[in-house]
Structures are given as structure tokens and as C-alpha cells.
Length: 189
Picture: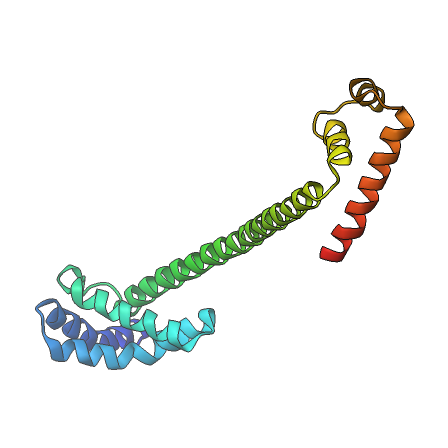
């Protein structure tokens, strides 16, 4: 007996099952399902290394076979047909997981940046509020000199001229204000 006739003897019952499956025969489907379920499962496990995903591949594959049964060609190898579907499904699942991983990494990086941006903004607002409170507690002349220097960006000379005081007095008020702010802000932070 030559190998070609042996192959025909092995595939003849399968061709008959595929023909019956095409007509909607549930028993033919069950026989083919039982024949190939383990092979497709272990094939899927080889690439996915995940039991649940391999089971999903098998279930989806046989659902597709049932849904597209009327398009089956009994002259072609049924096992090749199954493996082609399995390979495509495995490839698509791996690609999907890869995209999901990249997306999660992207989100993780952006979430960190967003978290730190929000954290920095809250910290800055809190610091600014504390600073405003401390400036409001300054004696009126010292507060006025400090605000002219820091908010109005006036030089010591300009402040001295506008308030009709010495530059040395302006320097002294600024120095004392900065020391006061430094001492009190350090306690807060």
C-alpha cells in the first residue's frame, strides 16, 4: 500500500464528517471537536503560555467553524484549516496584548506626570497661600517695601526715592523680611 492511498483512507472519514458538518450535522461537529480540541489547545498553549487564553482560542475557533460550516471545503485538509484559524487568532491575541501593554506603559508614564503636575500645583498653591499670609503679617512699612521690591520689581534705589528713606533702610527691611519668611516657611515645610 502506498502512502498516498493510506492518506486517502485516513482522510475519507474526515471528508465525510466535514460534508455532514456543512449540512449542519451536530454529531459530525462533536466528533471533529473531540478529535481536534486537545491538539489545538496544546498548540495554543505552546505560544500563549496561558491556560485561559488557550481555552478561549479553542472555543472561539470551534465557534467560527460552526458559524462558517457552510463555507467549508471537504476536499481540503480540515486540520490545516483549523491550524490556520488558530495561528491567526493567536497572532491577533499576541498583537492585542502587545498594544495593551504599550498603552498601559504610556498611561502609567502619563499618570505619573499628571500626578506630579497636580501634586506640584497643590504644593505650589499651598506654599503661595502661606507666603501671602506671612507677608500680610508684616509691619505695614516692611510689607510695602517688600512688595515694591518683589511684585513691582523696583530697585532699592527706586524704593528709597519713592518712600523718601535711605537705601540702607530698604536693604534692612528686605533682609529682615526674607529672614522672617525663611524662618516661618521652613517650619511649615
